[in-house]
Every structure is written in structure tokens, then in C-alpha cells.
Image 1 (tube, rainbow, N blue to C red):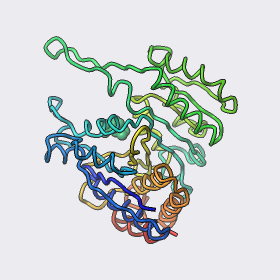
Image 2 (cartoon, rainbow, N blue to C red; image 1 turned 45 degrees about the horizontal axis):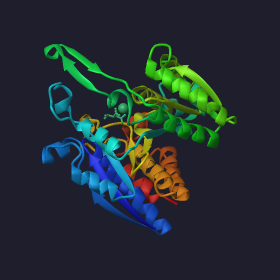
Image 3 (spheres, rainbow, N blue to C red; image 1 turned 135 degrees about the vertical axis):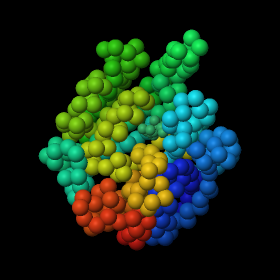
Image 4 (cartoon, protein in one colour; image 1 turned 180 degrees about the horizontal axis):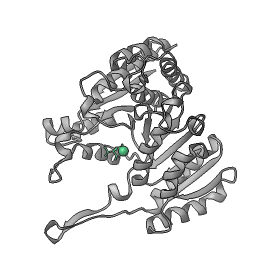
Length: 353
Ligand code: IPM
Ligand code: MN
């Protein structure tokens, strides 16, 4: 099969971790007789520097012409402490999600046997946890009307959700729950927010169509606690954009490191596959960043974008093997030898069976 991949490394550690994922993609292609073809695109701070736009039209076209986008991260400290900046790297990611219609962000959380002791949580709490966070990605507060009043002294963001947005993400989540352990938790703040009441209403209307799924409802504050006191409770967790952003960073602690959490953003057009950890500028260029989340995102790309399950599994198994063999970066080394980003990438690529 010919695989057209848009390669968007972005900023910070993005280029180094994407480079390792490309090694894994090429290795799996060699094994299974596929041919990967990459088209490079700028996004984030590097795109602002070059084009004055965090998601240039050209990058959008590259994405639309590809079957999948392999994405690193965006962000640059130079914008973080400047609330007056007119363009920001993060706008590139938000624009990409919006323009490609990627309303569903899937963030699977699983534990690796060799790493459970690395989790800041008690081993018996996390060992065996395995759940899927589904984050709504193109609605809510991140995209609602925002602005300033009173000469800038008042600021507002609006959290708007339409029924169709809520319905499509819930249906997708019911479907995933059905294919997993049949348990869906809808996370909202329906005791306070009107938008959350719409979510809960729509979920209650849809639930009878999925009698094989056990549906329950949880307030987001309670869910934040449950994620660290009893993560094994969850199978599929679905929530709106803002809550999902926050809860999935928290959920990454369950597997031991942010550097392990992969994600797939899917919807109307080309899907985007990216690690959740962000640009981690302090580590950029030092060959210390953990590439496993990006490599695992490439595995998701095979499964979700190309429908190539076995290839995805082959990458996943190589990642597991690298963890078992202790070929890991410093965030996972736990006193043992720490390997560089590119050494881990080489090892994983060489061990794709
Ligand atoms: C993420 C990131 C982004 C988000 C930022 C970079 C805009 O934190 O993918 O979780 O908030 O969605
Ligand atoms: Mn985030």
C-alpha cells in the first residue's frame, strides 16, 4: 500500500520525536511491503516565523492531500509570557483541528508492567488500568466567542455547544465503549453549566439505543479525583474540550510519564496523530525527550488512518519491548541507564518484528 503522510514536526522537541516515529513507520513499511511518502509542513512558532501564520494555507493543503498527519508539538516560551502577542503557536494547532474537522480526540491510557512503579500513584491502584479518553476537540470554550471589554479590563470566553456536536462525539464514544468493556462515563459539570446540561440530556436520550453499554455520569471535579484514586473504574470517558484537555494531562500520570501518551484526532478530513506532551522547550535539541508517545501515535495512525491493525500492533510491541529491555529516556530510566531520544528511536525501529 502507498501511504501518503503529512509530516508536521512543529516546535520544541517536535522535530526530534517525529524523526523517531518516522524511523518506526519506515521500518514497519519495509516489513509489511508498504511505501510511505512524506510531505513536510510548517505549523506553530516555526510557521509564524516563516509565514506570519501559525497554520499556513500551504500546510492545510498538504494535510488535505495526505491520508494522515504525523504531528509533533507547537509552542515557544517567547509567546507564553506575552499575553499581548497577536499570533500564537497554539493557534496553529487549533486552526488545524478546526479546518480538518477533527472533532474527536482519542487518548488511550494504559499501563506497562515494567513501569507501574514509575507512576506517582500507588502500584496497586494503577496496575491494569486501561481506558480511553475521548475529548471533544472543535467546540466549547476554546472556539467560542472571546474578547475584552472595558478597555481591556474585562475578559470573556464563551462555552458554546450545539446538539449535533454533542451527539456525534457521544455516538462515537458509545461505539468505542461497545467494542471495549461496555462502560461509558460521561463527564460534565451539569450541576452548574448549561452546556453540560445539554451534554447530559443528549447522552440520556442516546443511552437507550446502546443497551449493551452501561452509561454513567460524573461531575468533572469528581472525575479528576477518581482518575487518581481509582483509575481502573474507567473504560471509556467522554467529555468536552476544556475538561478533556485538563483531565488527559492528569490521566497521563497513570501510565507513569507524559512521554507515553499518544493521541489520534479524527473527524471529517485527514486525521492527526500526535503525542499529548507538547513542545517541552527546555529539552529541545538535547536528545533527551521521550519519543515513545509519538511512536505510539504512529501506531494509532496505522490502525485508524490506514486500517492496518497488524502494523500498528508491531510498533506497539516494539515499544513494549524497549520498555521491558530498559531502552528508555531519562524520564523512565528510574536510576538505570538513560538512553538518548535517537537511540530509543533506533532501537524501536530495529525491533519491529
Ligand atoms: C493539547 C494541547 C493543546 C490544547 C494546546 C497546545 C492548544 O495542550 O493538545 O492538549 O490545549 O488542546
Ligand atoms: Mn493539553
